[in-house]
Image (cartoon, rainbow, N blue to C red; front, side):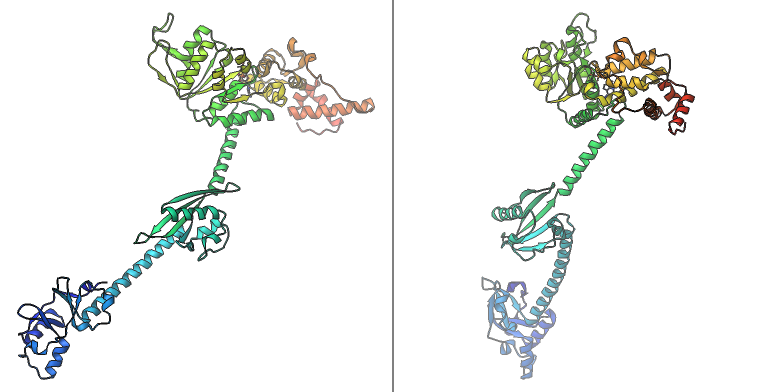
Length: 582
Ligand SMILES: Nc1ncnc2c1ncn2[C@@H]1O[C@H](COP(=O)(O)OP(=O)(O)OP(=O)(O)O)[C@@H](O)[C@H]1O
């Protein structure tokens, strides 16, 4: 603080010829307790304090006594820019304050000083309370932060940590006051690096720490400067992303499970086998991304069903699912089917022109079925369309922007076709970003019965019937080799339902080409020890009756399947000790 900040500015002066009366008048008027005395040239020649005035009256002076007779002539003059600190030792009553042009600018009296100091004290007390309040608020803000916060001074010693720091650290170890090197937190090295880099460069720095079990910490160091622009401390925050990562993983897992539940709910996708479960999981995994997928497998194994599953579980689900079968469309029409055409572009064309399948699939998914049958000249155009996501209709000049996902399916060996130069290699790689192989039905026998039941239900529903298969028919379906895969199975089921006259379908109703003899493993009863014939008959009958009752859950149906009247079945069951409540 400088003297000019606490002095009484521009004090009123008295001429040396003025009297004590004038002085008293001045004191009363200005409420000051001293006055500089000037001569005719307005130069200060003395100073008269109230104290000196009272002293003079006591010594016999009167109101008429002129001030030059009683004033203090010994003057203490100081520059207005002198620091207050430097005049603490001086007598305050007589301080005259001059500026650098040697002009009187103020006086400093004890009372003024006391007032000023008192004011300053009150002020600083208020400011201290305010600072205390701000400090408290700051502290609670820092404590409320979920991020761990640690403040380190320029010497590298820890000045403060918040509660969250202990959570991130995973222990109660208190690093306060200690050097940063003694921290026990897992990301110690990264934290020290951040601190050192902030100290060296004076700006905000980041580091990422990754550890076991999805541990991920983001460490951010921010410099704090004082008024002199000196870097005095570094505030380091540690954001723990571990929980977030775990939650993310969990959400991904849940959404995957949810998806597979949805798929299980999808009525037209039936599977029990682990092989098919793997295929469905692959389909679900690729459904989330927009990559091209090549679905391979024998004819009729369900490639189209898998393509639909991908579409239905993809973000494009609200868009169209369009399918074009390259093998089924005559070569000369395939191009216009794919790309569409403008009006009058060729004879026989619709007058108005027509959008192609690619255009129709915009915003959705296009399945190129039997893609191995696509003619070579169209393969070039297709590749260009996929790469540029843009097509021209036949006869059209305006490019049409595409936003489609391409899936393709084939039962051919595309790699072989590439070698034989019947399929373009570049297109093959473009389509085969991800490939999914759907296994043949003979490689997933456990899917056969659920599929057969599914088709049986559908056909019964369609024709309003209530037919069912005998055990032997199921056995046959399960054992058959199914060269035509699921389509063949579905066709046979429909044929059996339509053709059979009774409600129960027996093997003798199987078409000739499916004669039971063709079954790869005919029905056999295995005998591994010799037992009396009666006992053997009882064992076989018991097994058959239990199985039939379990499968059909009805005496009448089980009887039909086993070829006996239900009353006979009931009697036999009782005789063999099989309990059954119909
Ligand atoms: N998992 C399944 N659940 C229910 N039905 C299925 C399943 N897989 C296939 N199908 C049915 O079998 C028939 C043949 O399936 P799909 O057309 O998908 O086979 P594909 O492999 O595409 O045949 P292609 O090679 O002849 O094009 C269809 O009627 C389909 O609905």
